[in-house]
Each structure stands twice: as C-alpha cells, then as structure tokens.
Image (cartoon, rainbow, N blue to C red; front, side):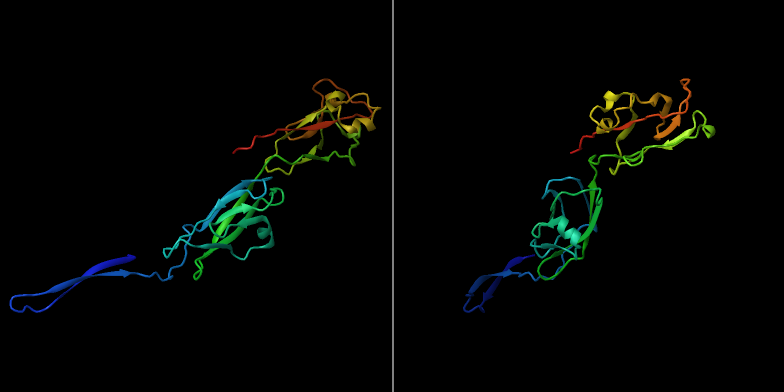
Amino acid sequence: MKNFSFNVTAMDHPNNGQQFKTIATVFVNIIDQNDNVPKFPQATYEFSIYENNAPHSYIGQVTAFDIDGPLLTYIFDNPSNEISSSFYLSSSDGKIYAHNSLDREQSDEYIFYIIASDGYHISSSVRIQIKILDLNDEIPRFVFPNDNNDTLIIDRVYWNMNDYICQIEIQDNDEKPTHTLLFIYRFDQLKNYDYLNKHKNILQFDSEKFFLDHQNRLFLNSTNGTILNEGVYYLAFKVRIKIEKRKC
C-alpha cells in the first residue's frame, strides 16, 4: 500500500438540542525506503551466439527485480580482461553484446558473473554462460602426407596385398568436421593445384592399386588383380568440404 486516506469527524456536545460537527479527510502517502535487495529470478543464464558474428551483436539480456523500484544498474562482477574486451553490458537494461567477432576455435565458451545494484543494495551475482556455436569456417589441412613429408618406403619382402600401409591424417579444427577424403585418379581433378607444376614428369597417378577405407586408412589393393612391382607409385588426395547452412 503506497497511500491511503480516511475521514476524521469532530463533534461538540449537544446544547439546547443542537450539535455541530465537521469532517476532515486525511491523506497519507507512504514514502518508500530502499530496504530491499535486488534479486535475479534464476541463478544461471545460458546464451549462445554463432562465431564470426558482426561486432556489437546482441547476445541476450538479464533482468533483476527490486520491489522498491525498477531503476537498477547492471555491472560485471570482477570480470577478467578477456571478458571485458569481448563483451559489453548495458548498465541500464542488462543487455549483453559482443564487442567484436568471436572465434569458437579460440574459445568455445565464456563464463562470467553480473550483479545488479539499486544504488544502495547489491544483488548476489548471477552466472552467465555464453556458448560459441561453430561455423564450418576452418580449412582442413593434411598432417600426413604434407609438403615436407610426402614419401613412404615399402619393403615388398615384408608386405602383402591388402596390408595396411599408413593413416592419412587430416586436421580440422571445426567442432563437427564435415570434410571427406577422396582419392585423385586424374590430373584434371587437380588442375588448379600448384603441386603439379613442380612434378610435371608424373604421367599418371596409381590410385587404382590402393584403396582408402572410411577411416582414411590406406591399404594395398589386390581386389582388381594388381601386382605391385618394384618402383615408385604416385598417389594424390583431396578434401571435399560440405558447407552447412547456418540455422537462424
């Protein structure tokens, strides 16, 4: 109850059968005292945002309540330099923004705390968890073979057909790799690859003499009647990337 009113009646004693009275209305206004602490309705807020976002992108909002009044100020609770440089908090309404573009490969999650103040009391801190969602923006690279290590020597004395040769290793820093490793059979499949300019003496690839399983393991192939003689065999691989549409 912020205010109320009541009537006060004053009467004199009857005199010669006459009595007089008067009525006054009293208005009472209750002046609020700031004696309540702001409170958040939940202990943790979870938000998410896709990486490579535009600077100043909106992430989410926290809201505290104070029965003394709605005017509150929101501030970070002892933030690290990384949090202060990565996020902006609107002190008037608790909205959280990204200062700059975020990279999931650098950090996939941020955790920090926010408090609300009514100018006299400070709320308990609320936990903020921001997850950085992955976009397929990382280019896979070959770990083996690579430009500095692309030769494998096999001793035919100890090797049989269908024997395991090696693992073709690819590094993809995306959260959910969407690449596929493929054998190259013809030069026109690599016509824009500068590797060919350095190896023009290669007449053809020998991919049909080998096979690659679904785990990117390379084996000698005997299913097509191939016989491996002593010599040098050239193989080439490429990575096909599946581009996924961003969900809004």
